[in-house]
Amino acid sequence: MSRYIMAIDQGTTGSRVMLVDAAGRIVSMAYSEFPQIYPQPGWVEHDPEVIWDTTCGVMKQALEKSSIDPARIAGIGITNQRETTVLWDRKTLKPVYNAIVWQCRRSAPICDDLKARGHGPLFSEKTGLIVDAYFSGTKVKWLFDNIPDLKARAEGGEIAFGTIDTWLIAKLTRGRIHVTDYTNASRTLLFNIHEKVWDKELLDILDISGEILPKVVDSAGVVGTTHADILGCEIPIAGIAGDQQAALFGQGCFSEGEAKNTYGTGCFLLLNVGHRKVEPRKGLILTLACDENGKPCYALEGSIFIGGAVVQWLRDGLGLIENASQTAAIATSVDDSHGVYMVPAFAGLGAPHWDMYARGAILGITRSTTKAHIVRAALEGIAYQVKDLISAFEESSGKTFADLKVDGGACLNDFLMQFQADIIGCPIDRSQYIESTGMGAAFLAGIGTGFWKAGAGIKELRKSDRRFLPVIPEETRQRLYRGWLDAVGRVKVH
Image (cartoon, rainbow, N blue to C red; front, side):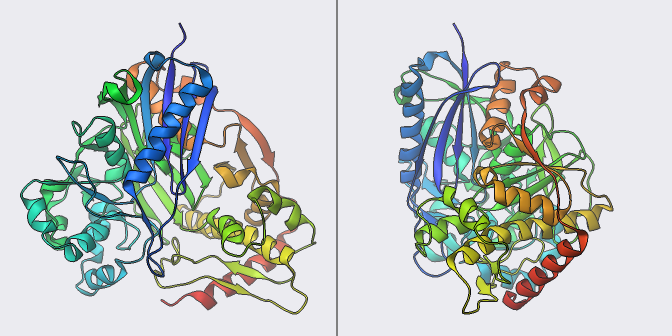
């Protein structure tokens, strides 16, 4: 009988589960959104129990829709929103607080203090990251500082820390397994990516107890099995990777020099640089990704906090659209944005600017500005931010991009993809499967269980859907981009 891989893709706005067959085809998929919690401006939280319930629900839905017996699942791969931080009681598996989401800015003052005390270069050297509220470490510090008795309980071994992969594995195994993989560990500000260990010096600076930390494992390989009462049988958990590293793997970019950009809630551009340590420049960071065997290698990354989330805001915050699929038609109903620029710095600016205190703005509005101009400016703002990253990568490496592989929900927007090709001046290669994040998790689990062989065989499973070629003149490209840079300069605080 045929066997399958289950991929859990736990994202910022929802949970998705895919069942993938031996030919790399998605045979069943289920998805469910869950609520975002905004306690005050700049703060973002999730309820970890809702994440678990949602994920568990879509696992069962995907199986029911396909009538596939859980016993035919060869392995489970997990990919997750990175940096989002959960602390829970080891015995009861009850969270001590809501999950603090990667977008949350509440720990910015902690970051300011670390930098004022001169610790920035040390963190960058050891972790490849910059000191920013984006990453997990200062979120943990905030929890220790603000929840009574939490530090004492942590030092007593009662408390576990994890990013969402670790939380889901704890729930799937009923608390038996407390692990993360190298890609997720590398996003915490606590992990030395060169020595591949949790770094005691950094933990001491943040006054974080090492007792809370999970074991770190390769991204491909069996780490344990699910509890039988969840899906009716025990299933190996055999793949783990943070969402962007999983997407890089799912796009077949596990060799040096290959790059992809994911258009999800945020946008994330990663370039595989192999097993050699490189110096990140121009606001980029160095992180751990996966080689063809699911073992750690290095990648340069540029992270944009608000990508497709700006479309969600147009729908939910402003009521300008009913669904995301309308935006392409609305954007093409006008010839251009009429001089309007939208800088979606709702959670500050990520790479290459790294301004935690910048906030969003719509600039260039006149009496003749319409809804269509604002919608178009929102989509163009996504593409301009990616152009910022491309420029930083090219300046840092001295090389130009021959093309850019893309995935994620927003890449289905043909207007956005064409404008992206136009503004960066190179072809855009859209994957047949926009859910490359989930496919990466599936491929890693398949390698970890022997379902697929590593290397070229995995790369052949990735197919292109469409290539978008740049068509606008260079002068127009430069003029539009100068306008964007002026708009970004107006919202930056630092």
